[in-house]
Length: 141
Image (cartoon, rainbow, N blue to C red; front, side, top):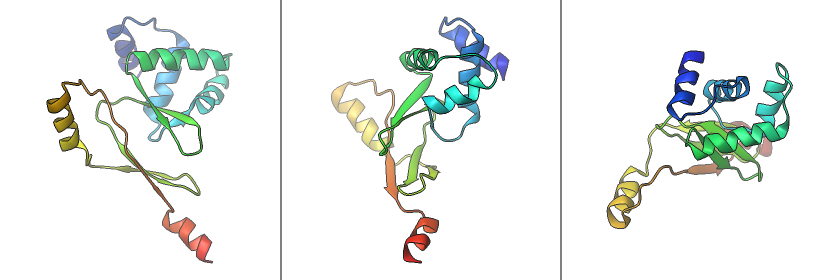
């Protein structure tokens, strides 16, 4: 995994620091978006790091489109690695369970927008929110 991360950093002419490697590695391992605080607590177990260092690196990764920023209903900002093949999410508003939606229903809309506006669309987000079956049972019971 280190070789892949190093090649990602090299491609964007970014220094291959231990912190950057650890952040990218963590994001690559996670299926669901994670907060900067989650990243901080994970890395802090193995390396002395500040929260500002995490944010600074995340902002750098955002600039180079290596990560995607997702704002959730709880007001928190979450990050995920930009695999270039994006996922949309079904999110439980009670327990925050996140289920990826496999097929993108926005492909034709995006194609039309590109054609009609000339934009180079780099990403889009789609989230559905509701109660998962487990939380529905708890509310009924």
